[in-house]
Image 1 (cartoon, rainbow, N blue to C red):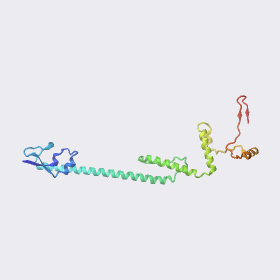
Image 2: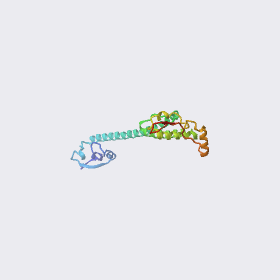
Image 3: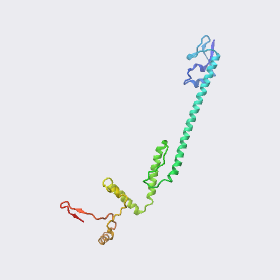
Image 4: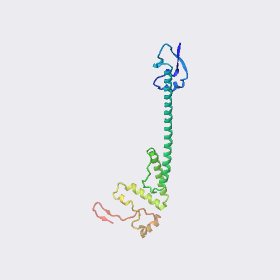
Length: 217
């Protein structure tokens, strides 16, 4: 004679990795131990049908708890995913509203704050916005102003960090012809002969000879 013990009792008593599989097969029965013994496989002591029913209820409650835990974890992941999407959308909408009120100057460093998760996205958008703002600023210039800006850029390449007085002179507009060379009769005659009337730079200079130290104007 063999006692008929539920198959799920033959699994680990700590309800470990094989628990779900055991619960799925809890309706099955197998011949496990002779009727004369009091202990079945894996150290589970057989103490009668009432004891088996108690173990069944414990296993059922454990399975319900595990199922509830998995459901809660799934809900947390879903809420977290949708919350991140909502924060992204809210950041982009808020950014589009606040950028319209910011200064259009290319040298302006104003920028709205962003969430920590969107720091990289904010940096990329800021670079694109700066390029667009510079392009929009350049469209305001006519050809004369563009030539003047090219001269400023060239002067910056030549004199920046090399001439002490350069930083103070940036705010002053570049005139080029400081001595009104275009109104000089001799210059007009030479420009007509050479067909070159464009003056890049004209100013009075003092020349000092190295040998005598005399100054010539």
